[in-house]
Image (cartoon, rainbow, N blue to C red; front, side, top):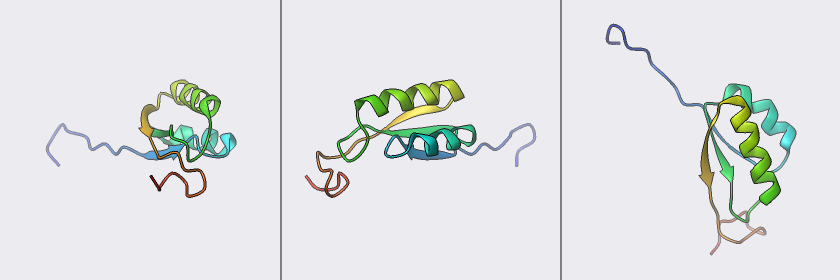
Length: 77
């Protein structure tokens, strides 16, 4: 490693899909999170709650889009 430089690892997870308690337990360990914002899981309310949870923990927010396909978890057009 070059003197004076520190390595940094981005610990990322897909969240906002199922159980809010699981997401809350993960937050202290994450540096970024992809919020389920498609129609495979979650809901508009879960998206808002999960973004607020990320904000409270200083976790960067990204998007985890999907197709309108709950039956196949957003993988089919």
